[in-house]
Image (cartoon, rainbow, N blue to C red; front, top):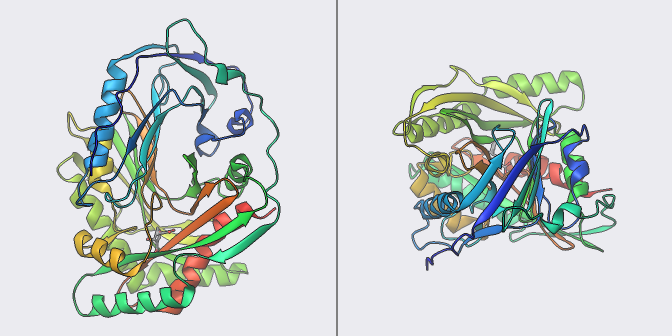
Length: 421
Ligand SMILES: C=C(O[C@H]1C=CC=C(C(=O)O)[C@@H]1O)C(=O)O
């Protein structure tokens, strides 16, 4: 099924310092905004100078989509004339990307925008991408109209009703107890329809306001605020934040504390977390040295849920690219399961839906290989007036359908709240 991606064009890229203290999102015109932001830093972008699309591969387990994307980007970089007056990660040639969860699905893409505005602490910059040196992209002048409210929404079930998904959880628990695998992450979707096209900038504003500690993203209609950092690369250093194990937030400080204590001492959740750490260490072993992970996970509190979280750091071996790391880490045990092969098969058997880019790598990369890639969680696919929301849960031998349905609901809350005026 694989086909060659379109050859990237010759481009001229200019980055200049920007003396503008505005919030990154204030720069975005309506339409199809690109964004990646975390605590006010990040990149927003619009327009499309070049694009890589991947149609899906036959086996679904390989890394073809990442390898093809890396080759396309390297070719684009070789054909680009760059004048970078700032020289930070995220300046010069930058591509935004979103990859499908399953290699068999179509929809993985990289986009080199026409205009990028970036911020890192007190430094901001503007990057423009043209077809010829000395020209300016028309998109730079796109009028920045105010973000619109979403308006009334009609909600419907997704691909699989709640009760049937609960049965899938029970089946997964049975297969885990029978020794077929240790853990599988099962996901479900719900759908909403607005009366007018959904203004993605409104969602981004609400997500950055409510989830400042998460990575807010918008790439080709996938919009969300993920707490899970797959890999951040700066020079030869990489970092990652492994999450697995979840409780809701309590309604009172006492209840919140009780749920946190339950999570940090739960054998089921610590086991689930350990699988995620082991899979990260195994995936990084051939690519990186000095992999450091903490002895015990920390508690990460978000507005809707609390997670067990472990920050990891490592030093990349020479010649290893960022997309090599993305390919090696994906799918982590936090979105696939353990072992990966049987978990992927069970997901295909039980979920009754194509995840598309939900739970796939999402982020940006520059021509020097710096970049930040998260896992597309707590997100929705927005297409015109339609939104499809996704949420998944790690299932282990001790899981129950009722608790997992409740956990999925607390994960849906991120995009539900972003969509409701
Ligand atoms: C699969 C999702 O979350 C993962 C990330 C953190 C904790 C998880 C858990 O505790 O089940 C999930 O593995 C999702 O939000 O859709």
